[in-house]
Amino acid sequence: MSLVGTMPCWVTESDWKLSRSPAQTAFQIAFKTPLQRFSWVIQNPQGLIPLADHIQVLGDMSTLSIVADYSWEQLETPIIVDCGGGEGGLISAILDAHPSFQAIVQDMENVVALTSSIMKERRPRDIESGTLKVEAHDLFQSQPRIGNEYSFILRHILHDWPDEEAAAILGNVARALGPKSKILIIDMVAIPNVDSTATTSAKLFLPDGDDKHPDYCVPSHFGSASKLVSGYSVHMLSMMNGCERSLREWENLVKGCGLRITKVYSLRAHTSVIECALDAQGLL
Image (cartoon, rainbow, N blue to C red; front, top):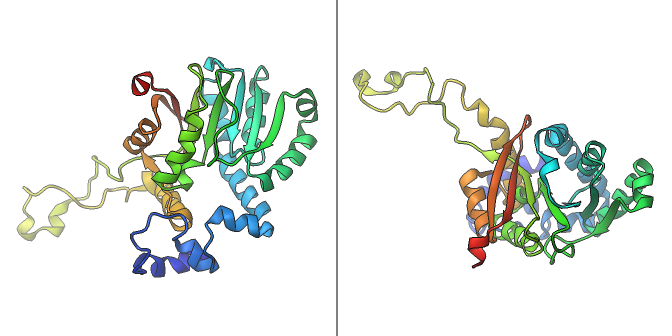
């Protein structure tokens, strides 16, 4: 709610209202800090567990659908790396359904201690056998897991960031891929907030009831199909200048990192799986 109260000041602030920086948002004004959100959490560890729990709850909303609706068996790599995997909920669900995989959970150094303790408690055999590993990794640094053994998950990561930072994160993973590797971007795909079957008539708003004008009025469902994605987009905007992206925006981001979208899997959830691979033509 601190962010909500600060947003009017932010969007009218002369120096920041057109900024795309993750360090010039309502978050900095509300918390009186020059730090972007993740840097602030590092310096204020009391906020780490609530943040990790919040992200885990957001992930849990779609985990069952991700495991059931994506074709995990068609991956050609034996190891799945969950980049920014938090408390390890998604990887645990994948391993339960597909025990032939090995897995690595990567996250910030201050998160890894929490994740390690959770995984040792919940999956001790996987930890002891090496089937599951937890390691610290900064998404803005080069990905250390390189080659055909690895496919990568980026769930609810790229929507946090503006295009420049999102491209830096995605590019680091792209440079680690082998020809058989995949990157699975798990995020929302924003859709236009329109309804071609709207029954509301524009005649009420046009002089003399001129029915030759196009119907530009509010759709009959008031854009209800876009409420969730729009709400998250505003939330990410206020914290990090991030956003939920349309398919065209995802295509532009992916292409700029030397990748191509091989398929978009619609899920029985609010997210989609945007499957990406190296773009051989783009590398020529």
